Image 1 (cartoon, rainbow, N blue to C red):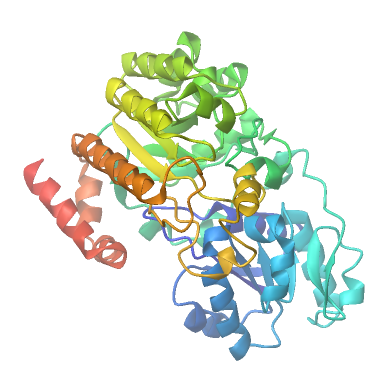
Image 2: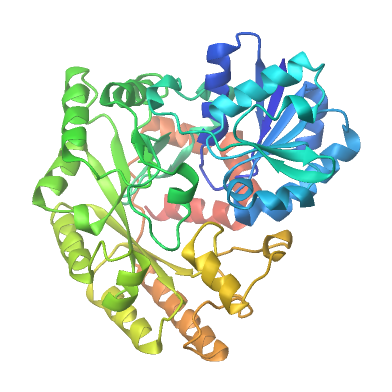
Length: 477
């Protein structure tokens, strides 16, 4: 059976772990599957591969683009089953009726997708809805009405899922030099050691999607790190967990195993932290692991707003202390902030601006509060009449980096005034981040890769100005 997984994720230097997990799980139980991952030239690549099934994953802000792509695919290959998965269809399954997809996979997809392809094969690669009703975790049309089967329980032991199928990617193109934090350039690898988050912030849909936090074993984590270090020769790894710093014993065991395998210190790491989990022992452990960058969702400098956003689980003082401790260890600190939350006032924004200016961070990112399905933000936006059911059926929705005055969640600040505040925060972001410069610690392999056709092509694909950025810093390093 030939399967195509399409991803439209195209961030610089990213690694599409979702379909890689699906692929490795399918291979575990179906030795006959032939899988291809496509992230550009969709129609021509589908034509070349001639798949039996096509799957596309979508978060909410991609839903418009994914839906339009699905229409183009269906117009050309109407008999190939087309499957949608991901956060958006899980949180808003009724939106399935607005698409041309044949089937949707709800929540965690490995077991569900395996059962789905097995059934489709039995049915001659046709979608026979009566035969899908016994498969948990699906949404489809039945007599032109929406039909949702029982939600599937989570995979309790994540180690049942094999290491992602990295061989499906063009690793020569993926493993190009990029920012490796702490002002260095390096070859980057990507890792997820868990699924879900033990917290339930009002703006985040992770809890609603994954339900409960689960963790790979320390042995499995180090197995994967060893592959990245010894096979792909990376020297910096981005850990993409919602929260990596949740357990000190877990980090201690990872360090111990890495020492035993002689790979500790051969790669640096960047992780997502949380201020209430940062103390001296934790930063000492992160330093021993060779972490050189920690990102924090500080969100707000207002105690009142922060208490709402994070449901009383963290304080502004803990954020200040986390910055101090990480600064003492020399970690690069990346601070994330949300403005425009429901109930936020100008006084609250002043406190956030004060926090940013008084606490030295290397990089800050300002996000405009946006409604994600499955969150309190979404419920508030619907309650206020800021959005309706068609919100994600239109382009450029859910963009948290840009301001659209038609979608403001706070009712306490006039729209035009909020626009002025957003501009002020973005200027503060630019001012803060302009002080951060990458210094090149180049190995010969970096120079070779940077001068390669693939590297220059990747720069030009993303942004022609990016090429000038790299060349300028190579000249002035």
